[in-house]
Image (cartoon, rainbow, N blue to C red):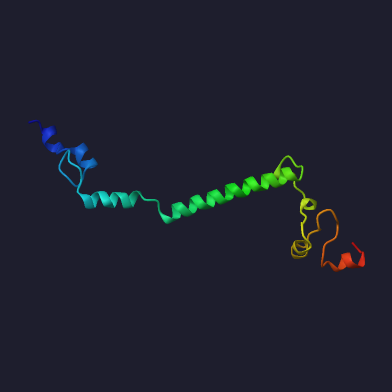
Length: 113
């Protein structure tokens, strides 16, 4: 037997199946540890959820820009932000849709705006 063959001791197979003999699969506990190692971590799952949220947020912002008649999100202006209900307009301090009136704004009540 050559020196290379005797020193190899199944090298490639030993690397693939460290728990068993050359050419044999590892024992069950070793395989279970591999499954645990390959399972996604909490951080990976949270990262995927965050990426999904940001992707959906981007798509909804693009749809909002198109609804305002703009070709790009960067073309949105502060005047494009309006509320659909009086309550929402008062809470956000933005004008009610179709008017320049901001509910709860004392300057608007005096007509100074």
